[in-house]
Image 1: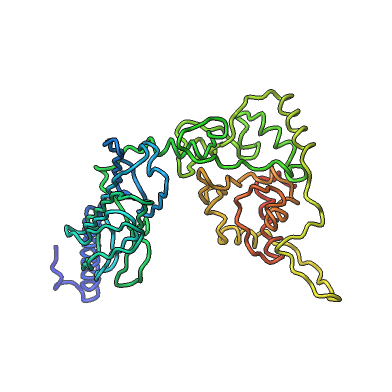
Image 2: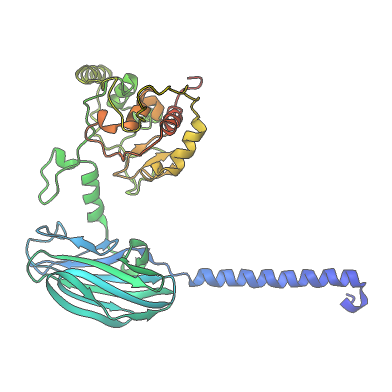
Length: 404
């Protein structure tokens, strides 16, 4: 092979550039591999260990330390009375500098961070307890917070301040734990499912809160497709997607709103109704319900001064409505295709919503949800008339038949 010096200057330069590029790429690849190996495999949340008056310990995962229990037990498995709790894991800091933890609590509190005991005090009444400041580098630092009731109404909230921010609650995305210490979350998941699926509406569950209200059926007429309602009551599993995105609860459904077999979680019990039974119930529900008054006031309509001339309405723009849907915050509670997260307490899947709701429903719902469902949990957004019309037009296309 000829040496570089024996080659033409242009060819030698090209070979030199190629060699340098190979060296840079190899160095980058090695650094990337090294970085990936160094990334800690921590999981979100802190490992919480609660010990009740009976001396029995129960372990779970808490996303953050922000509790005001008052007269309630911190865990359904604990007996009433005094208790102690310990949270352990890692505190993640993104910038080097001086940090200071503060706790607002009533009880005995001890805070250990990065191998140092920064706070060990007792507050008989709720008050601020300030830990010693500590200098931390970027990274994950061992954290342990111990708490014990001392009478009164127990509460504890962990706050911090740092080199780039003032006093604020320590957020969940800065708290982690080692996977080897991850607790069994079966009890917590079952408790969450029981509440989301409203088991307490039919069964008495000791120590549980009152069940969430199901959607009111006061104004079904004119706000729901009779065909969809019948299919929902019959609920054939194989036809769930064509019937408007409903599906039964199947084994393996995720607590974060993930889909199983491309079907969302169903909260309503499946009564396995025959077709004639479903039709009879749907007829009864629609007959008993009342549509909202056609001239009901809506919060988004702009009042015009007396004598003002009305401008001709501009054509609605579903594309603009789609952009609103994706940026307004709808996807925080709803799922549409592959976008968004519905979850156990979310607003449900909207991928086929036009099969369930008539086109006239959407503007009415966006303007005044209470006129349709008095027990609604929908945030009321302050939309301009044009925005409301565009968003309603877009929703009316989700799952609508072709050419409809």
